[in-house]
Image 1 (cartoon, rainbow, N blue to C red):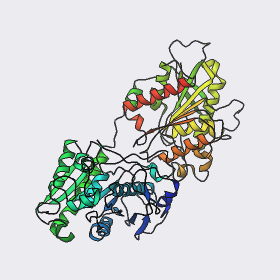
Image 2 (cartoon, rainbow, N blue to C red):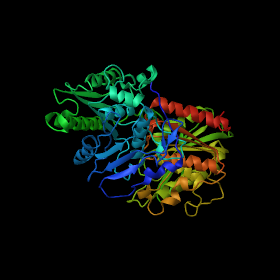
Image 3 (cartoon, rainbow, N blue to C red):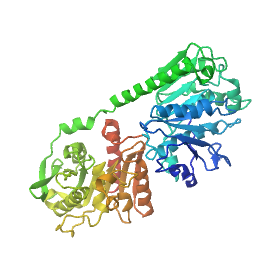
Length: 561
């Protein structure tokens, strides 16, 4: 079982988050990780620091590698196993990040905490460093290979409630490259590394915890290993043990067994050194290709939506020659005098794509539970048609007013209207309560468009450059940025978001939740660890879990029987 050590840090550690932000300089930059207040374990700290040196490629391809030099946990070989490696990676358009980790001296968690912090820091600065936060790997040599394999087997998804934005991010590397690594703390270990890491008399539990071949799970990242058959200080059995464990757990892995070279592969030169470099790059390219092929996710909700049809369609707004419709799913047995709760859902698509059918499963689900379910049609962003994101927002607000003002004819209780939406549709849903004054010209605003509850799903929630939609909205982005318009007396909100979302980044959702609570509003944030954008739409079990949690939330507020 993996034991995860999570250290919650205070906001003083935000320095690496902005240390080189916006810099176009590609010369190496040395960056503090801990601001001279570094953790020893989950409770103790010391006045010390660790550092990363950022080597930026002239034309980065989005991949970054944190590099852990060897040195037996008693020193750091930052030349041939550090900065030299970063420069080589730069030649192949890969960002190199050399980690100067603290030496443990029998404090085994110290190097791991530094490695985890380095990975989080790269992700926190991904935009400014031209890095894809889902392509951050780790590489290590000798004892640094042990550290890299420890980071690949001991990780967490971050602390969503941390004041420090870096600490909110996950530290699982996306891939691992291990070159003549120390892996085990057992019989074939490197004794010097073990003593320096664990102390002279480590417990059996500590030996097992840092014997990384015993810590592999199905979530361990894909791994490339290279090791010489004639390595005496660190026998090749170390790499073989790890490779075997990876294969047992069906983790993608390659072990390159080199016929000669010893420990250090002939001093970082020659055919054996060239071989691991060449083959690791080929492996990484294959990994990227495999990842690209697998990006087409299963889409069970689209299949469900294809089988559904609304009970009726009602025009709620006319714009020129165009009619905008409510796609209504009536509950069974709806009577003219009924006053049912209403669940309105709004599709995503970056404001420029998508269709109401995408959200039919949500509307149908709540119709099955006795509510009037509605999937909303709205104008899409189009330069050709002259429509903007402001028009998307206006349509959402118009629809809420129409439903409330025609509640009697629709069989709806005007005081029990729930609005939900996914991605950009979540933004339009939030807009119904947040963006006062963004209304269609000539439309009466005497009827409120504020819903009685909001259920945004991985929404566009921050339209600054750190979020999504800044370029699409333009200079007036702040007028349509939900996180910048929170005030008191907003409807109770249940917000779903994943920490792995790089489209509508998770920090925006966290900031929105915190702002809502500070203003005295009710806001629950349901966090899916490592969840990518749209996660609940592409996994039927997660979709059902979302419905269960939403059902409970609505029942708690008297909006669902």
